[in-house]
Amino acid sequence: MFSSSMLKSISKPGRYAGGEFGQIIKDPAAVDARVAFCFPDAYEIGMSNLGMRILYGVLNREENISCERVFAPWIDMEDKMREKKVLLCSHETGTPVKDFDFLAITVQYEMCYTNVLNVLELSGIPLRAENRDDSFPIVIGGGPCSYNPEPIADFFDLFDIGEGEEMLPEIVRLYAEMKKKGCTKHEFLLEAARTIEGVYVPGFYDVTYNGDGTVRAYTPKYEGVPAKVRKRIVKDLDTMYFPDKVVMPYIECVQDRIMLEVFRGCIRGCRFCQAGMIYRPVREKAPETLLKQAKCLYENTGYEEISLTSLSISDYTKLRELTDGLIEWTDEKKVSLSLPSLRIDSFSRELMEKVASVRSSSITFAPEAGTQRLRDVINNNVTEEDLMRSAGIAFSAGKEQVKLYFMDGLPTETNEDLEGIAHLAEETVEEFYRTPGHSRRAPTVTISVSCFVPKPFTPFQWEPQATMKELIEKNNYIGSCIKSRKVRYTHHDAKVSHIEAILALGDRKLSAALELARSEGFRFDAWDEFFDYDKWMAVFAEAGIDTAFYANRRKADDEILPWDVIDCGVTKEFLLRERNKAYAEKTTPSCREKCSGCGAACLGGKDICCPSAGNKGEDR
Image (cartoon, rainbow, N blue to C red; front, side, top):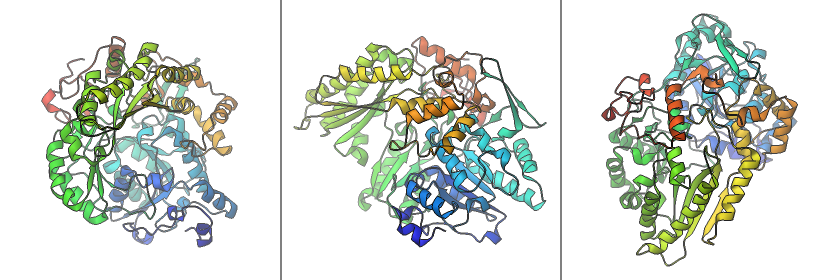
């Protein structure tokens, strides 16, 4: 445990004090395996993560397993730790991380890779798995970035690919059994890779490369190790573990509210969206389950806001039934509801009146692209008419501020598409004045533009990212097209997007660059105040990394990609069909309208995803 003198000398000591209401402490002597679960970012970010809350609870409900929390210390605490030679320890018992059986790290974002290495270093654990003997914890990776684990593969003993509620306890239970028999780490890893679906042990694969630097092959070193690791999913969300109590932080967190997970997956198939592909198939919770969980969490936490979480909440088939059931008691208790992911084409006055997040003076929509042609390319499936209708509903209810999300640098993009972003924003301003009953105040329309980053397991995974020069030019061009003073323009830093693309599309050769970056003090690169593009590019150059090879190169259709060792359920054939349809400017209907044969049904039987559409794979 960190000393009181250390806590008194830093900002936000509540990040490290522990002792929160709802934490779970078990006697180490009474369990067979101990897990340190790490979110490699600041405490207030990690404590807002629903996945961490779920896995913390699901592990601790196992009688012979204990799970404790670990976070990346902020800069001032890290300086104190290094000065006093104090190792990183857990929140619950102050046990050094290196003394646990497992260090499980959830990797949510590529720009946190240097934090992952810093956590290992601050824990006194060698960075590379090959340098860790049986005295060190087994380091497990999970989360969205595990779908291309290769850039960080050398630093992990294993990855759990997919949803961890069932898989992670299986892994730890297997370890506990084999530990009693005196088995080695290698023996455990081999048994896990052979017997537990979703387990990827990078050290059990030889990776060879072609002369041009592309991957030639992934070859398992041992019999029984799968040539391709298929992700795991939870098939029935109603019976899945969901925490009825959560740890209550002492300091304000990013998400100080009840997070109610309504469903997983997405029916839409936007061609740039990794989450929409890797979290397939769609699985919904019943309204009765959600109402019970919401009431229980309210009674156990006292939070005054409930956020209904999913990739696209308005696609939940029982949304009216759920919101009506919640409002029956939340209005009386003065508990507000928020829906963070409303689609333009399904926005309604009824939803706006029910949900607190749209009772404020502002509302957010995501057209993604400025013209219908480009929205068809990315399969966004919303129209300008949809946006004007939704904006009109908002304005007629007294809204004055609308925020619109877009991307630039998308495949096939032209200046006309960029001009369309300014056009949509200015048309939204005009819609304000066309709408009867609008506020007397002048409207503000804010457009926020992010740079397109190609991601694994999307139809655009073969596409190059625009060069840094092109991205900057695009951002500037959009700004030059805006004429109305009622339109505010913000854009994401293209430099961050470029580094993100390199790390997202990389292979194991990037481990040398990441190790070098850590040795030069890189951490918290997801935070603007610590990100340094020039230093990143210098590190890549010193490590001999051709950044354009990863970020700015169009990949061949038949190329073996670094993440091809993983099977996310969606087939490569489907992704190629979708990429080709993008270039033909053809859209694909949602899963509920027609099955497009993506392959995800193989993960849970023919009725797991949108049975009403028929899982026949019509487009195959």
